[in-house]
Amino acid sequence: MAINKANLIVTNATWGDTVNPLADILAKDGDRYSVDVDVCPLSKLELTNDARQRAVLRELADWDEINDTRPLRVIAANPYAPEALEKFEQLVSALKLRKDRIRFAAIDNDTGLLLSEIVRFIGLSDAQLTDIQTPKLPGSVVDLSKQISNHSEANELCLVLEEVEEVGGLAKRLLSDRQRVIRMPIFQRIKHSPDELKLSETPNFILINDAFALAIAIQGLKRLAVDMQDIVWVGTSSSLEVAVKRDAPGSKWLGVSDLRHDVILDQVSKY
View 1 (tube, rainbow, N blue to C red):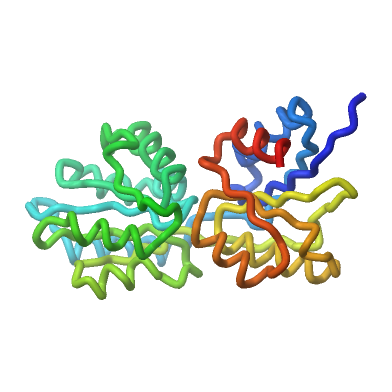
View 2 (view 1 turned 135 degrees about the horizontal axis):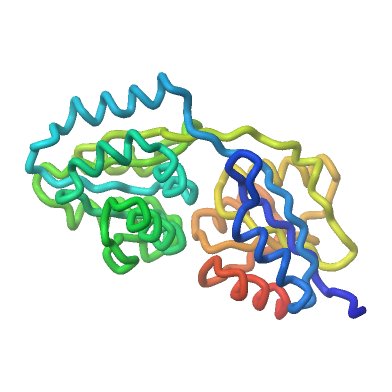
């Protein structure tokens, strides 16, 4: 058997006890690229409790009547926001009553693609990726907020789908641009132990797609007294690349064009 020449740690969060689809296909196809894949979700996702969900629905009803004519923009401000929307059935039902007025935006192309697939699946919209506004710099809230503000219609209401612990950077920037905004923290996560990171003697790559996973992973590496020069982070987000340089000095960044499994494995194998 050939010896694999790289170790890829996949940190993507999971919903409940399910398997992350990207992590699953990476693990199944890794050997073909001579890459060992270690699936190590650093957190578990879940919808917020009933009280928080009712608060979100109530705020939407207060700000936007069903027969209102003003446009709505649903924004996936987090890579996991589209899946959270799919699981929040009452919010989906409320948005369907307003579907003719809705446009979409997402924090990067991968999130936009997932959002387009989900809104078609749940019958909310026929939107394709090309219909969803995304920033030119993946993950840039500055770029996305400028694009939305520059192309918004009069009195447009932005519904920012995010997680409970999010700092709300996108929503705050939209508010500073005088946009009408509702922050919708519709999901939360349970942190797993960062000590589960399994490093090898081969080059170690860590796939991340959100700031929460990056923070947990860095914490775990520091506990293990790992030399950051031995770590290569993998992702698409420009904001995560900045965070890596700031919070994990000495480590390296491998930017990939998108989060398709073949793209990731090909780039890791050729690094």
